Image (cartoon, rainbow, N blue to C red; front, side, top):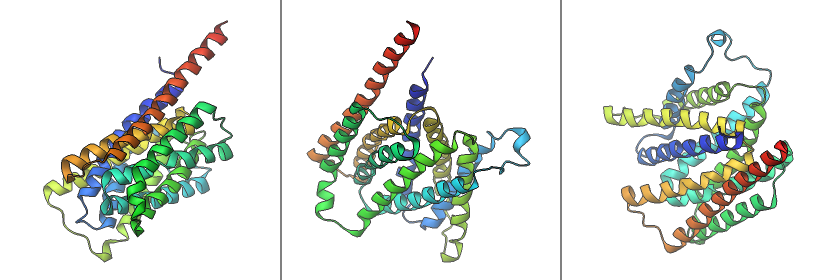
Amino acid sequence: MFSKNQLGFLYMFISVCAFSLMDLIVKWSEQYPLGEVLFFRGFFGIMPLLFLIPPERFKNFYYTKRAGLHFLRCISGLIALISIFIALRSLPLATVVSITFAAPIFTTILSIIFLSEKVGFYRWLAVLVGFIGIIIISEPGFSSLNFYYIYPIIFCLGLSYVAIAIRQLSKTEPVWLISLNFSILITLAGITTIPFGWIMPSIKDLFLLSSVGILGGFANLWLSQSYKYSEVSLVSPLKYLALIFGIFFGYIIWNEIPTMKTLLGSSLVIISSIIIFRREILLKKQLSISRHD
C-alpha cells in the first residue's frame, strides 16, 4: 500500500502529464481568441466532475460553509490560468515552463505561514537546487526582457495561493466541489468574451479545444487529490518534470532547440525532485520502524 505522501506524488505526476498536454494544445490554439479557449477549458472541464458528484448532492451540490475561501481560490486560479495562457502563446514553451517552476518557492513559504508545515533542511536544499536550475534556464530570456515575461511570474503567485487554498479547503470540502467551482467560474468568464468575437472551429479543432477542458479538468482534480494527501511543499517540486515535456514538444513541433544552459538547468530541477522523493521514502521507513518498536 502507498503512504499518503506517495499517493500525493502519484496524483501530482499524472496531473503534470495532463497539464503538459493541455499547455501544448493552448500554445497551438493561438489563432483562437483567449476567451474562447478559456470557455472550452471550463465547460469541458466540468464534464469529468459530474460523474463524481454523489447522487444525494445533485440538488444541493453548491452548498458550502466556506464560500469565501472558494471564491479566493477560484479568482486566484483564474488569474493564474489567463496569465499562463498568454505566456504560452507569446514565449517559447520550454521557457514558460521553466519560469513557472518558481511557484514551489512561493508555495513553500506560504505553506509555512498559512499551514504551519515543517520543511526540513533537505527539502529546502532541493528547492534551492531547483531554483538555481531555473535561473540557469531563464537567464537568456531575462537578459532580453520583454513584457510577456511577467505573465509566468503572475502565474506562479496565483498558483502558490491556489495550492494553499486547496490544502485548506480539502480538510472539509469534497475534491469535486473545489474543482467544479473553478471550472464553472472559467466557463462564465469565457462566455463574457463572446462580444469580442469568437471563431467557429473546424471538427478537428473542436476536438482539440475540447481536449483542453477534459485534460484540464482531470489534471485539476488530480492536483487537488495530490494536495489533499500530501504536504504542499512536498509534492509541488514534482512539477519540475513538466520541463521534460516542454523541451520535447518545443523541439518536435516548433523546432525550439534547447541550449546547453537549458539542459543543465533541467538536470538540476530533476535532481531536486529526486532528492525530495528519496528523502521522503527514507523518513517514512524510519517512522515506520520507530512506531513498530
